[in-house]
Structure formats: structure tokens, C-alpha cells
Length: 441
Ligand SMILES: [Zn+2]
Ligand SMILES: [Zn+2]
Image 1 (spheres, rainbow, N blue to C red):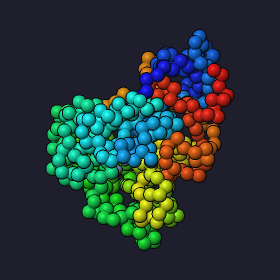
Image 2 (image 1 turned 180 degrees about the vertical axis):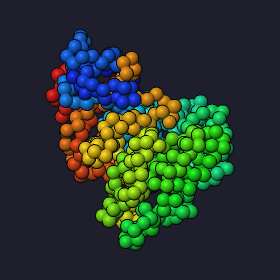
Image 3 (image 1 turned 90 degrees about the vertical axis):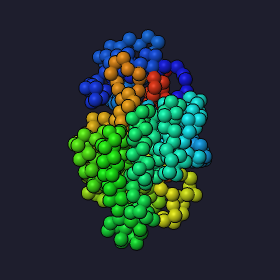
Image 4 (image 1 turned 30 degrees about the vertical axis):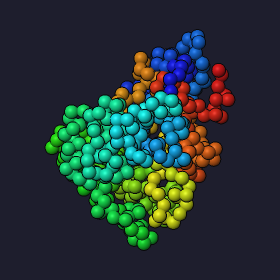
């Protein structure tokens, strides 16, 4: 993250909610020199030297952490780069993100990691962590120099975009992990079962005559990798869970004592394969694909019972020309950083499916699987705060995007709930323009 001045702000009379820290109530949130200095009675905080922000009726949450983002640098900066990706994260209330390594070329050496960390120090308005690939060049053949890559500052390892086809290779990676640490994040898919599928395999794919990707393509690989992690006593994180069978496999592995964590994406929690009837690849083509309603319900149950500890956007920017083509040829992936909170608030909280507190916990839950500190509003901690207006209505894309790409799965949707200010790593990283006008400086 860019170095800058620590925030000196008081959020007057905000409704503060941080369930993981046992904090719930109306407070003046005092942020001094980038740290939470105190949660005081409304109106009681001394304002000397602090910017005062009227936050009565607004909500202050611990800012969110996204462990699964594609920043497209190096190689495809016309889709996204560190600066625009970080800005997109800040606009969504995120105070930290982890960037995937399937760039062009991939992040496979210590020098690659060092170069990206240096670039983030120049350009990013929120802290950005980097994963490196498990296999050299993502070819699935040889391991990268995991120890040296960790020394260079990589948070963990992932070949995301592709599964690790070879069980032998993953086993070796888990053995090296014992020496150098670093969670291994896994895109779980059996390429032989996925074949040339472009959507979930089920009645909708049959009706549309499109090749399907069966749920077992994901769940059988998770079962294999959970067994390997258990055998080698390694630590794995399963990315973008999409299917009922997958939730069941992770739940069973956890019960058996395997060190396994997992994430679900907002689009899998909000949408089903019924959307594919529109044949709109810009919003609805991604991998893993949107699945059936029963799968969506299983993911929600996983969120509730803690099988799924975090929400991750799998923010995947693509250029228009990769999306404005026939469905079968279009690139996989959607953007999601700017809409994650608002979409889940609209679709799951306002409808009574899950509680607001659970959503906040899961959106901030992506740091722990990578052994990073959880964002919190507890006094004394670094300030990482998302100030939100839960009643604000807005139409996604109407005012453009902070991201360089436009393939938002929420494009054109009216959402309720908006991030007004994000404090990340102790600095003010984002202010909604229209909101700033009303703020006394
Ligand atoms: Zn993936
Ligand atoms: Zn991904």
C-alpha cells in the first residue's frame, strides 16, 4: 500500500457492528493516527484535530477482506492493474485483498513477487498481498521455489485459473509447505469431467443445448485434496465453492480434523443457472459456473454453520471484446469487488435469509485462512473500517466503475446499501463522491 497519513477522523454516532469482537451499539468511532482510539458515547468524543463525520443512521463495520482477486498485472493491464483493482476494492469496503498469480507471465519466482510488492507500494490504496503459483508457469509439472518465494513475501500459493491435476505435485507442495508455510489455495476442478463445458450441467444446460460442467467435477477434486492435506498435515483453502456436494465434502473434512478452509462468492450465493437462459456471458459466464437453487441453498447453509468461513469475490476483469461474443466463446469470470456488500445485503439480508452480523463476519473472514490479522473495530487496533448507508439505493454501473473492466455480474441492477467511506490499513482509502460533499471537514 502507498504510504500516507494515518486517518484522524471521528465518525459521530455510528451504529457499530463487529460480531467477531462482540461489539454492537451506537458510538462515536474515534480514529487517531490510523488506529481505533476508542468507541465512545455518541457526542462525547473530543474532536480536537479530528475530521468530524456525521454518521448518525450509518453503519460502521470492520472493513472486508477479499482473499481472491485477479489484478491482471503483469500482462493484461488494459483489463485491470494494481491501482484500479485496489481502488475497486476500496470502493467495495475492502481493506485488504489477495491477488492471484495467473497473470501473463504468471507469478512464479521470488523476483516476480518482489516486483509486484514494490508496485503495490507505489500504486495501491489498500494493502495487497500476492500469491505465487504452486507449479512453475502453472504448467502443473514442477514446483516453484516455494521457500525462496515465501522469503520474498508471498502470502501463499495458488494455480487458480487451473486445478492442480497431479496429486503427486500437490502432495510435494504440502510437504514443502511444512518447511516454508503459506496456505495453498485451490481451484478445484477435474478437467476430464469439466471437458469443454460452459455452464452447470443440469436441466437448464440440457434445455439450452450447452455443454455442462457437473458438480462432481469440483467435489471429487476437493475430496482428493482434503485427503492429501489430511495425510500430509497441510493447510489448504478451497476457492469458490459452488456445489452442494462440495460443501458436504468440506464439512466432513473439517469434522475429521483436516486444516481446510473455504470461500464462496457473492454471485454463487445470489444467482442460479436459471440466469443462463439470458445467454448473457458478460454477467453470467464464470468458472465454476452458477449452479442450481439447491446448491445456492447449500452454500447459504455453509455460511451459517461456519463450514464456509469467508466470502471472496473472485473479481475477474475482462475486456469487452472477450465478453461480447457468442456465449460458448466468451471468457469466464465477472467483477465483484464494488458490489459484494451491496448485492449480498440486498439479496440475503433484506430478504431475511441471513443476519447482517453474519454477512459482516464472513466478508471480514478471508484474512484468517491465510494467517493474516482479521479486520476489527476493537480499540487499539489498526483502523480498517467500512462506513455504510444501509438504505442508500443505487444502480450498478450508472456512475461507471472504479475497476477498468465492466463485466460486473450486477451491471444494471438496483441495489440497496452502499459503502460511503473505507479506511484501510489506517488510511482513508475511499470516499463516495456524493457523500463527501455533505461532510464537514
Ligand atoms: Zn478459480
Ligand atoms: Zn479466480
